[in-house]
Length: 290
Image (cartoon, rainbow, N blue to C red; front, side, top):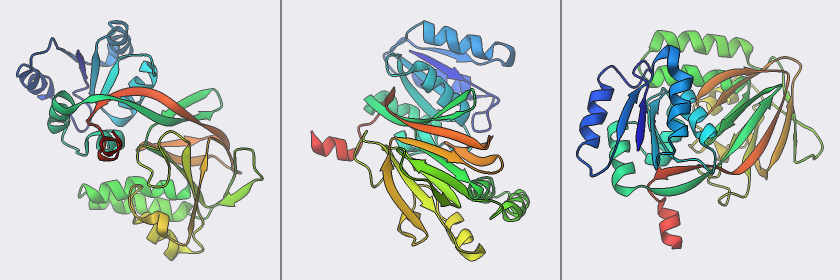
């Protein structure tokens, strides 16, 4: 097995390589730990994939972990994306923790191959995969503010919140689910089967359209996490989908698996039933079904 570590990622640190080697030495496995370097980043990742290890552990930011999982694909090595980023949506969903050492131990001791479904956002020539959720529209601007608040960075949270409030209600999205007639919404959230409470495994993405009528409703929706109870809010409607087209008059703010991005004025999303294979504990619901 190979473990890729980005020591410059916000949730990792300079001691992570030595700490990872110490943990792996306690297990009967042939493992190597690679510290990712800025000028060799892409080549080191490709070398690790080309080596075809049984498992590829990734301790890096949310974007890097998602990119490596996407490049591995359903036929590549098992991938274990450990929490080394800011929001850590995918690692939290797989391991239930933001502690990378505990996640590593869970993968080593309780891990089994798990097929992970997801989605792919196409923005012009750029394609970006997600395995938890993609938030499209002005409410996505609240994600950095909420994360800054969670980590105690109050001044930064205030600055993000001011920016989000200024841009809220500046333009609504038009979206079509599975080629049905277009609808309008303040925001559209697409949620993978791995974390959806409404979808059966690998049948599609849960699409949730947000339509707050005023600023107070927008604040209420922004107060809930993607995995919280906002689906029960009367300003939210949900349904299953496999293909989505999204348009707006201006560029579309989005948060894709925790990574803020600015999409073009039109984007497409498709469901991927078998995106990659993860090494993670079997979910309780899956255990009960066996």
